[in-house]
Length: 268
Image (tube, rainbow, N blue to C red; front, side, top):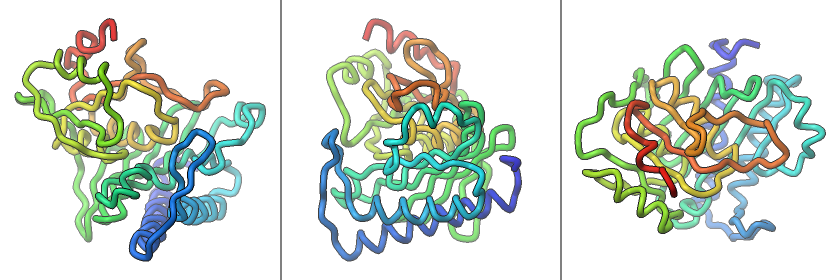
């Protein structure tokens, strides 16, 4: 199965939209909030979207395993055998969902040899879909319109910097102070990557843990649009399913990879 297969790409986009509809049904009807062992929140919308996506992908590509946030207990001994698999966050931004601010998304990525080669990010509240295939460009779909997107290179000042609504600490504050003339834009979930990809934001620094399903789809969209998601310690793009833990380290997402990001993160 090629990552560029149009029929498969459209089918995955449709699955993401169906998951978004399931999320919005819960959003409209009300929900309770539980907590996982790591104290991250969980709602019935997470589980409903998980069921839609796993069922849909399993029918579409029965030979490919699916790793979802809600099935992340799969052992490393099993996962390490995978070359191709789907990496899914059924509801990215559960905290934003609970706050009812609309800034949450559905994330689906196809991983090959550790690299995200196809990604879909769907915003349930607006219905907007961003999707990309490695080497084949990135796209924004809204209603009946679809446009190719590229990052802002070089960016004008002030740099438009995405700031997480739910995750901010002293190290991040120091990094922001080093960046010079900036405009902070509060934004939740993987929508940050997509807004950099379409050129409406420039940088998203994240100092602190995220999980692999939080970044894979957004990384694919961003890279296909001309940007980069780079590990703060090595300067390398993230690779997936390379170790037992599913946590990412610090990173910087950039619309223009030529920005002096190493100066911003040095010593933090």
